[in-house]
Length: 158
Ligand SMILES: [Zn+2]
Image 1: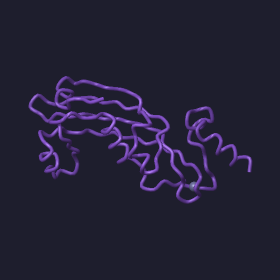
Image 2 (image 1 turned 60 degrees about the horizontal axis):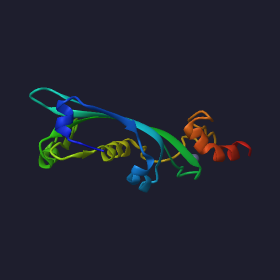
Image 3 (image 1 turned 180 degrees about the horizontal axis):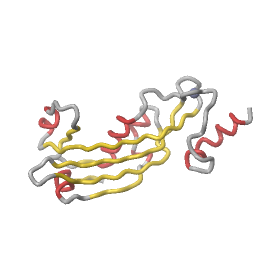
Image 4 (image 1 turned 180 degrees about the vertical axis):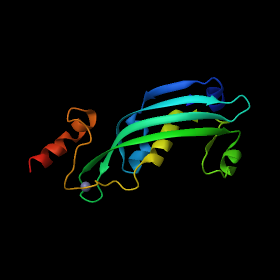
């Protein structure tokens, strides 16, 4: 799904959807598999600018713990305001660290944008806080609980 960023912002358009795990290839390459997630995009701005797109995304992701090699589930949340620049050069030239700017002059792929922001929100290191007392971060009958069920069952029976 692609959007025209400036038009999206000016119309105060919105998009909501589920995150499709197989579209999150860069995250998979980094060792993080998306179990389930959703995103919400909202356009807005002022008549004389700046225009922006607000992105909220939440995803349950899993990886292998770098300490015990057990499976690790984490909830990742992204909440960003992306100001639209008139060109890529303008987006790159912005030296204000408090504001995220993206090139608004070209069509924007929603899945790519969502993945960009989720990658920024990933933990630095995929590791249980305490490997001994691993807790499933979900109900056993929830999506992640089910996904981790085989592994937790083994662990709890030991
Ligand atoms: Zn661990």
